[in-house]
Amino acid sequence: MDSSADGKKGRRKAALSPLLSNILLNELDRELERRGHRFVRYADDANIYVRSCHAGERVMARAERFLSQRLKLTLNREKSRVARPWGCDYLGYGMSWHQQPRLRVASMSLRRLRDRLRDLLRGARGRKMASVIERINPVLRGWAGYFKLSQSKRPLEEIDGWVRRKLRCVVWRQWKQPSTRASNLMRLGLSEARACKSAFNGRGPWWSSGASHMNQALPKKLWDQLGLVSVLDTINRLNRIA
Image (cartoon, rainbow, N blue to C red; front, side):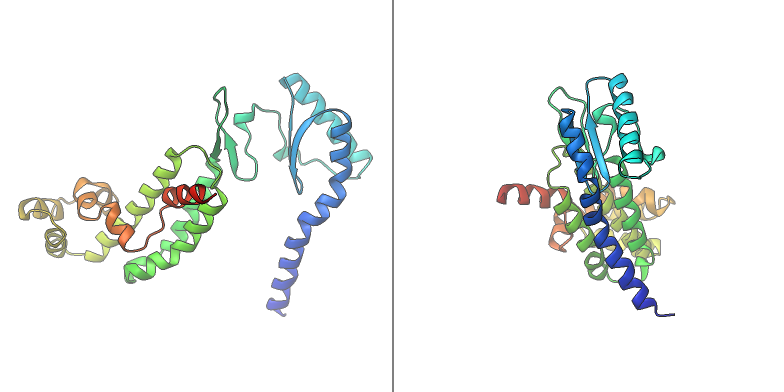
Protein backbone atom coordinates (compact mmCIF):
# COMPACT_ATOMS: atom_id res chain seq x y z
CA MET A 1 0.00 0.00 0.00
CA ASP A 2 1.42 3.40 -1.03
CA SER A 3 0.68 5.69 1.90
CA SER A 4 2.22 8.71 0.17
CA ALA A 5 -0.13 8.25 -2.79
CA ASP A 6 -3.07 7.93 -0.43
CA GLY A 7 -1.97 11.14 1.28
CA LYS A 8 -1.80 12.98 -2.05
CA LYS A 9 -5.28 11.74 -2.97
CA GLY A 10 -6.60 12.92 0.38
CA ARG A 11 -5.06 16.38 -0.09
CA ARG A 12 -6.44 16.67 -3.62
CA LYS A 13 -9.88 15.67 -2.36
CA ALA A 14 -9.70 18.25 0.44
CA ALA A 15 -8.63 20.95 -2.04
CA LEU A 16 -11.42 20.09 -4.51
CA SER A 17 -14.19 19.91 -1.93
CA PRO A 18 -14.72 23.71 -1.52
CA LEU A 19 -14.56 24.20 -5.30
CA LEU A 20 -17.13 21.50 -6.01
CA SER A 21 -19.36 22.82 -3.23
CA ASN A 22 -19.27 26.32 -4.72
CA ILE A 23 -20.20 25.00 -8.15
CA LEU A 24 -23.03 22.81 -6.88
CA LEU A 25 -24.45 25.23 -4.31
CA ASN A 26 -24.44 28.22 -6.64
CA GLU A 27 -28.08 27.34 -7.35
CA LEU A 28 -28.87 27.63 -3.64
CA ASP A 29 -27.30 31.11 -3.59
CA ARG A 30 -29.50 32.20 -6.51
CA GLU A 31 -32.61 30.79 -4.80
CA LEU A 32 -31.85 32.60 -1.54
CA GLU A 33 -31.21 35.84 -3.44
CA ARG A 34 -34.49 35.40 -5.34
CA ARG A 35 -36.32 35.12 -2.02
CA GLY A 36 -34.57 38.23 -0.67
CA HIS A 37 -32.68 36.51 2.14
CA ARG A 38 -29.46 37.79 3.66
CA PHE A 39 -26.89 35.01 3.90
CA VAL A 40 -23.23 34.08 3.81
CA ARG A 41 -21.79 30.85 2.44
CA TYR A 42 -18.33 29.34 2.13
CA ALA A 43 -18.20 25.92 0.44
CA ASP A 44 -20.92 23.90 2.19
CA ASP A 45 -21.07 26.09 5.32
CA ALA A 46 -23.84 28.72 5.25
CA ASN A 47 -25.65 31.10 7.58
CA ILE A 48 -29.03 32.60 6.63
CA TYR A 49 -30.26 35.63 8.60
CA VAL A 50 -33.96 36.21 9.32
CA ARG A 51 -35.97 38.26 11.80
CA SER A 52 -37.41 35.56 14.07
CA CYS A 53 -37.05 31.96 15.17
CA HIS A 54 -40.34 31.13 13.46
CA ALA A 55 -39.02 32.53 10.18
CA GLY A 56 -35.80 30.62 10.73
CA GLU A 57 -37.61 27.30 11.04
CA ARG A 58 -39.63 28.06 7.90
CA VAL A 59 -36.54 29.05 5.87
CA MET A 60 -34.56 26.01 7.01
CA ALA A 61 -37.41 23.71 5.97
CA ARG A 62 -37.56 25.36 2.55
CA ALA A 63 -33.77 25.18 2.15
CA GLU A 64 -33.81 21.50 3.08
CA ARG A 65 -36.56 20.83 0.56
CA PHE A 66 -34.70 22.75 -2.16
CA LEU A 67 -31.45 20.86 -1.51
CA SER A 68 -33.24 17.53 -1.53
CA GLN A 69 -35.51 18.01 -4.53
CA ARG A 70 -33.43 20.25 -6.80
CA LEU A 71 -29.84 19.34 -5.95
CA LYS A 72 -30.34 15.82 -4.57
CA LEU A 73 -28.39 16.74 -1.42
CA THR A 74 -29.15 15.93 2.21
CA LEU A 75 -29.06 18.65 4.85
CA ASN A 76 -26.92 17.69 7.84
CA ARG A 77 -29.47 18.12 10.63
CA GLU A 78 -26.88 17.52 13.36
CA LYS A 79 -24.97 20.62 12.25
CA SER A 80 -27.98 22.73 11.25
CA ARG A 81 -30.08 24.74 13.69
CA VAL A 82 -32.01 27.94 14.22
CA ALA A 83 -30.32 30.24 16.73
CA ARG A 84 -29.53 33.83 17.58
CA PRO A 85 -26.60 35.33 15.61
CA TRP A 86 -24.36 35.35 18.68
CA GLY A 87 -25.14 31.66 19.21
CA CYS A 88 -23.86 30.65 15.78
CA ASP A 89 -20.24 30.31 14.77
CA TYR A 90 -19.07 30.69 11.21
CA LEU A 91 -15.65 29.71 9.87
CA GLY A 92 -14.20 29.87 13.37
CA TYR A 93 -15.68 33.29 14.19
CA GLY A 94 -18.64 34.30 16.31
CA MET A 95 -20.45 37.56 17.06
CA SER A 96 -21.00 39.34 20.34
CA TRP A 97 -24.49 40.07 21.63
CA HIS A 98 -24.01 43.88 21.67
CA GLN A 99 -26.35 46.23 19.79
CA GLN A 100 -23.44 46.87 17.47
CA PRO A 101 -22.10 43.29 17.19
CA ARG A 102 -18.38 42.67 17.18
CA LEU A 103 -16.53 39.77 15.64
CA ARG A 104 -14.95 37.42 18.14
CA VAL A 105 -13.09 34.13 18.07
CA ALA A 106 -15.51 31.23 18.53
CA SER A 107 -15.15 29.16 21.69
CA MET A 108 -14.60 26.01 19.62
CA SER A 109 -11.68 27.69 17.83
CA LEU A 110 -10.09 28.56 21.17
CA ARG A 111 -10.49 24.98 22.42
CA ARG A 112 -8.98 23.58 19.23
CA LEU A 113 -5.97 25.87 19.54
CA ARG A 114 -5.38 24.79 23.14
CA ASP A 115 -5.69 21.12 22.15
CA ARG A 116 -3.22 21.62 19.30
CA LEU A 117 -0.71 23.33 21.58
CA ARG A 118 -1.08 20.63 24.24
CA ASP A 119 -0.17 18.05 21.61
CA LEU A 120 2.88 20.04 20.56
CA LEU A 121 4.02 20.55 24.15
CA ARG A 122 3.89 16.88 25.09
CA GLY A 123 7.42 15.72 25.79
CA ALA A 124 8.71 19.31 25.96
CA ARG A 125 10.30 18.69 29.35
CA GLY A 126 13.43 17.19 27.78
CA ARG A 127 13.92 19.90 25.13
CA LYS A 128 15.53 23.32 25.19
CA MET A 129 13.07 26.18 25.51
CA ALA A 130 14.24 27.71 22.20
CA SER A 131 13.27 24.46 20.46
CA VAL A 132 9.90 24.37 22.22
CA ILE A 133 9.11 27.95 21.18
CA GLU A 134 10.23 27.26 17.62
CA ARG A 135 7.82 24.32 17.58
CA ILE A 136 4.71 26.25 18.62
CA ASN A 137 5.39 29.63 16.98
CA PRO A 138 4.13 28.68 13.49
CA VAL A 139 0.81 27.57 14.97
CA LEU A 140 0.42 30.79 16.97
CA ARG A 141 1.46 32.97 14.02
CA GLY A 142 -0.90 31.24 11.58
CA TRP A 143 -3.77 31.31 14.05
CA ALA A 144 -3.26 35.03 14.67
CA GLY A 145 -3.20 35.69 10.94
CA TYR A 146 -6.51 33.91 10.43
CA PHE A 147 -8.25 35.61 13.37
CA LYS A 148 -6.89 39.11 12.76
CA LEU A 149 -10.47 40.36 12.21
CA SER A 150 -11.40 39.60 15.82
CA GLN A 151 -12.60 42.70 17.68
CA SER A 152 -12.66 41.09 21.12
CA LYS A 153 -9.25 41.30 22.79
CA ARG A 154 -9.89 39.48 26.08
CA PRO A 155 -9.84 35.92 24.63
CA LEU A 156 -6.58 36.77 22.86
CA GLU A 157 -5.03 38.00 26.10
CA GLU A 158 -6.22 34.83 27.83
CA ILE A 159 -4.66 32.63 25.15
CA ASP A 160 -1.35 34.48 25.44
CA GLY A 161 -1.42 34.11 29.22
CA TRP A 162 -2.28 30.42 28.96
CA VAL A 163 0.60 29.77 26.55
CA ARG A 164 3.09 31.51 28.83
CA ARG A 165 1.78 29.54 31.80
CA LYS A 166 2.18 26.26 29.89
CA LEU A 167 5.78 27.19 29.12
CA ARG A 168 6.47 28.20 32.72
CA CYS A 169 5.08 24.80 33.71
CA VAL A 170 7.60 23.17 31.35
CA VAL A 171 10.40 25.20 32.92
CA TRP A 172 9.29 24.31 36.46
CA ARG A 173 9.34 20.62 35.58
CA GLN A 174 12.75 20.95 33.96
CA TRP A 175 14.21 22.44 37.13
CA LYS A 176 13.10 19.24 38.95
CA GLN A 177 14.68 19.63 42.40
CA PRO A 178 13.57 22.31 44.91
CA SER A 179 17.18 23.41 45.38
CA THR A 180 17.55 23.94 41.62
CA ARG A 181 14.29 25.85 41.54
CA ALA A 182 15.38 28.11 44.38
CA SER A 183 18.72 28.79 42.70
CA ASN A 184 17.11 29.63 39.37
CA LEU A 185 14.47 31.84 40.93
CA MET A 186 17.19 33.85 42.67
CA ARG A 187 19.12 34.08 39.40
CA LEU A 188 15.98 35.52 37.81
CA GLY A 189 15.67 38.26 40.42
CA LEU A 190 13.73 36.88 43.40
CA SER A 191 14.99 37.37 46.91
CA GLU A 192 16.53 34.36 48.64
CA ALA A 193 13.70 34.12 51.17
CA ARG A 194 10.98 34.25 48.54
CA ALA A 195 12.81 31.93 46.15
CA CYS A 196 13.25 29.27 48.85
CA LYS A 197 9.68 29.57 50.06
CA SER A 198 8.38 29.21 46.49
CA ALA A 199 10.70 26.34 45.58
CA PHE A 200 9.75 24.27 48.65
CA ASN A 201 6.02 25.09 48.63
CA GLY A 202 5.01 21.49 47.86
CA ARG A 203 2.55 22.59 45.21
CA GLY A 204 2.24 20.96 41.79
CA PRO A 205 3.82 22.31 38.58
CA TRP A 206 0.60 23.79 37.15
CA TRP A 207 -0.17 25.71 40.34
CA SER A 208 3.39 26.98 40.56
CA SER A 209 3.44 28.02 36.91
CA GLY A 210 0.56 30.41 37.58
CA ALA A 211 1.85 31.71 40.92
CA SER A 212 3.25 35.20 41.36
CA HIS A 213 6.83 34.00 41.86
CA MET A 214 6.94 32.43 38.38
CA ASN A 215 5.16 35.40 36.81
CA GLN A 216 7.79 37.67 38.29
CA ALA A 217 10.71 35.42 37.35
CA LEU A 218 9.48 34.75 33.80
CA PRO A 219 7.39 37.79 32.75
CA LYS A 220 6.01 38.54 29.29
CA LYS A 221 8.98 40.70 28.28
CA LEU A 222 11.31 37.74 28.80
CA TRP A 223 9.17 35.53 26.53
CA ASP A 224 9.16 38.35 23.98
CA GLN A 225 12.95 38.35 24.09
CA LEU A 226 12.99 34.58 23.57
CA GLY A 227 10.92 35.08 20.41
CA LEU A 228 7.60 33.64 21.59
CA VAL A 229 4.78 34.80 19.31
CA SER A 230 2.08 36.78 21.10
CA VAL A 231 -1.30 36.31 19.43
CA LEU A 232 -2.61 39.69 20.61
CA ASP A 233 0.54 41.60 19.63
CA THR A 234 0.59 39.90 16.22
CA ILE A 235 -3.04 40.76 15.50
CA ASN A 236 -2.52 44.36 16.63
CA ARG A 237 0.52 44.63 14.35
CA LEU A 238 -1.34 43.14 11.37
CA ASN A 239 -4.22 45.56 11.88
CA ARG A 240 -1.85 48.54 12.03
CA ILE A 241 -0.27 47.47 8.75
CA ALA A 242 -3.68 47.03 7.14
